[in-house]
Image 1 (spheres, rainbow, N blue to C red):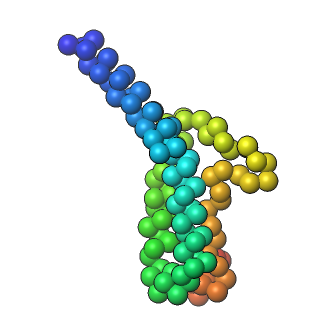
Image 2: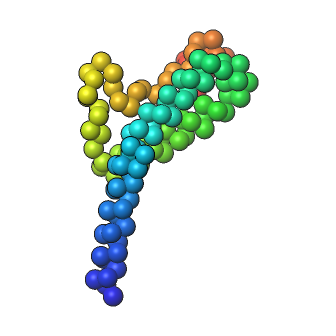
Length: 109
């Protein structure tokens, strides 16, 4: 039974690696799209972002989770330097000055 278990465990790890690296263009695409979504919300719905400040934290916690998963999995980011002046995934967006939290001296949450 031990050999079967190791084989099943290996298959599971290979399946996880495939999901992380390739499903819906992979984890780095998911990270980039979440960051793009936050940029879009700041641009198109600043009132919503000001009123519902926790939206940033939801996206930020998702970003932290996915980034840690990518790091631990060791999956290669093959698109990181395709365009030297545009890193991929894009950096996590800063909070616009117009929405700065007065209790926080910088523009991060």
